[in-house]
Amino acid sequence: MKKMLALASSAVFIALTSGCASFAVSNDAIERSAAQALGLAKGSFTVSDRVDDGVKASYTVKTNTGKQYACYVTGSVWQFGRVVSDAICSEAGKGGNPAAGGSCNALLKAAGKC
Image (tube, rainbow, N blue to C red; front, side, top):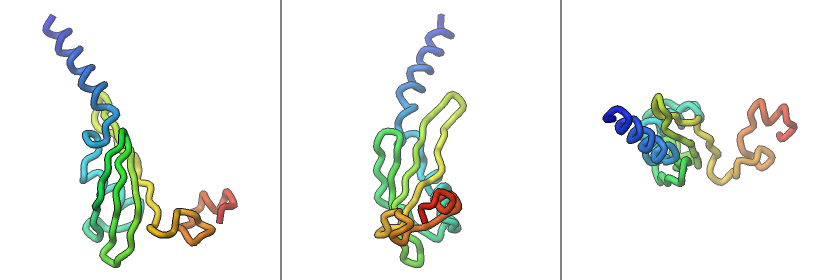
């Protein structure tokens, strides 16, 4: 009986926290994801203005050279731990539109978007 109660409690805990970025996404995960997405060394930028909205965590990245990016990740908690997506970032003021001067990557080029 105790085993069933513990199992049920664990299932309820996982269900309640699985969709909450504030629990699933740590600040360290945000820094690692932003560093990888932007090709920057950890410590060469600061993260601020974090806003958690459901499974999405939005934040601002400012590099030591003065560039600013708007980024977000999604996160959840599963049976085997936390899962955090790759960061999606766009340079502030560029709107993320490659035709308007945003970054153009191989996928966007292949799609004829830049």
